[in-house]
Length: 364
Picture 1: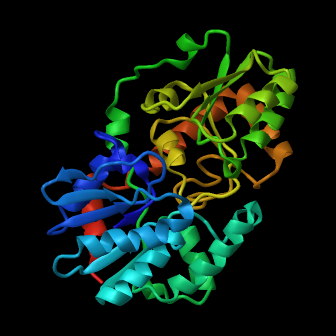
Picture 2 (picture 1 turned 90 degrees about the vertical axis):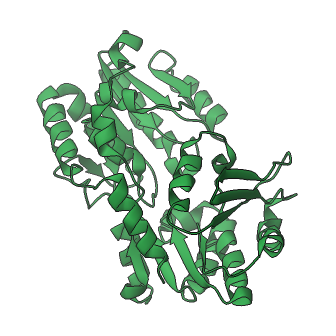
């Protein structure tokens, strides 16, 4: 497995525990993790799972360093190479699969065919071209939403090659969890708490959320926006809060390891992403019974739809503002949407059935 998720190397992390479960599906699982910065050590996650960092000098060398690590690793046959994106790790995966005559699975976790993805940077435009070329050469493609599947079919890729396997969310565990954080107790200054759980990165478009919320706060001064997450835009977003004079209405909590209690006790969950592959936070909010306002991205159109949440067009600040105002003033609507969202995710399946599907996706 080829991955860019460095949290796999963090002891006790959710990603590491997930890799341990995946390892139970194979005789052995070697995970090459793309890393830069301070050198990291190889980590034995379990008897069957090893995680090996590339310790690259720069991200440009990821593909080359993956090849170097795999060359040192190879002892015997590698049946399947699975790369967690169709970009840099996908390229390395394709080169390795050709050399070792292994089957190649490419995973697509982001909606790279969204026009917003392409516009974000020149690098992303190159990635789109690379992904289109690589996906045509893969033996199997795992995508996390029906939206991405339909986009790939639109490219002319054969449907039988594409497996839809979303990111697992343990709905039963969420719904049985005790509420450890009560939003209204923690933020007594707010009558209504709007929650965002997001990396503070450009594609999440939190700038739009703040712009829309600035208008809402003028009409509903006792409403608060609580943002959980960290990222490269933290400083600029905090500056925007000052510019909009929202210091008393917006709370940045930073990265929070355990977010479920916040979903459980917030009044509204807000997502303003430009694009998503899936949108795990939407499922977590739904499982918690938190009414949702979201842009039309990722899993929206499947479990999350216009019957279970308020869906607005991507990039439409006025629509986000209108949706927030509607739910702030209509408690019955909030309760109805929360129940509908919770009911919509009841049949997502348990961990064991998910692992069985994951194993099947490797049987190429």
